[in-house]
Image (cartoon, rainbow, N blue to C red; front, top):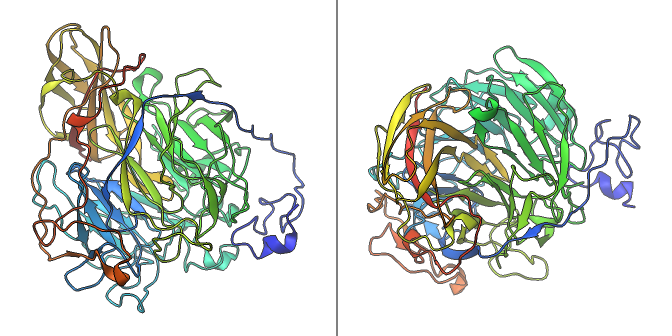
Length: 631
């Protein structure tokens, strides 16, 4: 048994409210009815054939990430005393733009400290970064207080004209300071921003917390009003980075700690309290992960939500939770259905794959979020099949050699592969492990190839893709044409939004199977009609359309090449600091232009190995098309 004295000094353990009770907690034993215990670990199927490959260097520690409309990935970090990139003013860069097709990375500048910030995409396609932390003048006097900052980043749809442009900070501020805030774009384009710390100090003290929400306009400007949320008060000290999803009726699903509710923003009322999720704490500092499963008209776009992993308290000794809870958030009276991963996990990145399955990757089997607070990395990716029978939904795949602990990210790329980066579980970057810091800063970027991209796929992808427009309206119908091989049997078209990724929270992430008609089985030329759902189902902003075609005989997936091939441009003279600190930094290769660096060659989509022949994949062909949904 862990002593009470030890727990009291531990950052964020148990708290002092009746909601955080049990053996070893400051508030003592629980006095209410016992909650159904969560199940322990359970064996998973073993999968074969997937693989990781290093495709480049992130340039900065990858604390936050987002896939931009130009197909490149933006990484965002806090103020550090080292990164791999420098700005034209001589300071280190804390943000970068990475091209997964070439490995090229360029530095991006910002004005305010984005440490542990939130984010979402605006209706016009810009990435909005929200809040952060205070200045560190002794490291970089050019970066100021970010607690109430708003940062904007714009990239073009199908054009490279804005590639490499810096973050824009015109001086707009939040209504209050927020560190570890979550955000969700609403159906009308407004942005819901909730929670955060006022000052970054002890979260067990209510005076340090910001248990409120505020609304930003579709342009990303606050209305200036902070409104108190009871669930954030109740959850203290587990109030940071809540999980938030928009439901089919426009209400929000809010999950924090172990608590969940349906919330109406316009009326500022709790529509319905959901049952508490059994098991450990599920959000920061013991974040597992949460995923809104793919939406479909086949069940009326019901919101099936999966919450996995978690932990008991914020220390390296904390056990982690192997259980997952799943609930249909729209249905009154619905209860959590419990199932198990093969091991407990914390700091898990849960994201949807293009075929509708869920990838669970990164994290640890022991410990919590924070600097030097985790070990026993979970190196093997899991795939959760939401349509398989309960108890048979998890498959475990071959592992990566790279631990991805605190401050790691993962997201789906345009080509259907997964980018994985980060791990910076130390206060300032350290590159060589030592006795005090066994896990250190990692700049390597990996690509993980899912099962659906393996097999004898050469020449089987759809070609000559033609979408009537890249700007789609809710409720609209659009024509999609493509050429397919002659044994195609059916088609699925996916509308996909990756959102903003940080601390195992994928803000705004969602996927919709679009209604379609006109597919001709066996025809080599397809002309189908797509129906775009309402704003409640697909909020305005940048999305990707994936085309997935099933075939006779072989059932695998192929993909089209990334169709943005133009050069990156950068208006500033960045330089790569390859030999800083007595030559202790990893060797990197300087590119031909001062602001462009080719760090490693990527594994291009056309070179994905085809030496595996694995049956029972869902689709044989894949293509993607970045689009924008209007308000």
